[in-house]
Length: 159
Image (cartoon, rainbow, N blue to C red):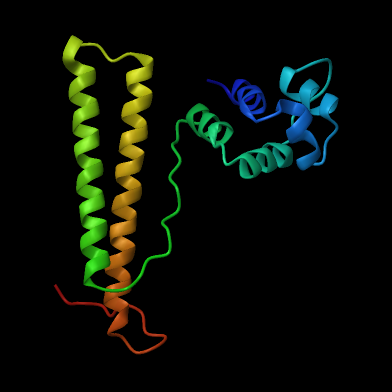
């Protein structure tokens, strides 16, 4: 899906459509509708696309943009609490996501062909695995910092 299709679908999926979303992003309903429909010379701007995504919590424009650039997006890790239980919880999350990747790939390979939808699902599962691995690293870093004096970064360790 390209970015403009994603923008159109975001507006269409928003409760009330362009009439409801437009005033929330500082646009007239007809203007927003023209921008996502590519009517005449109307063009959807980056600031409006970001505002629409943030307001709706719908990341399809961001994901389409990333995909068109050969990239993928990851949600930022949530704020973590310090302690052993957090590290173990993040480890469990990562292992769960790993099993989701394995399941999605093996189910997709059942017919020796990976469809577009299967590819999308695999990429989503892998991005969720990477995100949980990042959260695990952050929890480990926080636990390590807990024992260091304020303002001290991780000391170098000789190998």
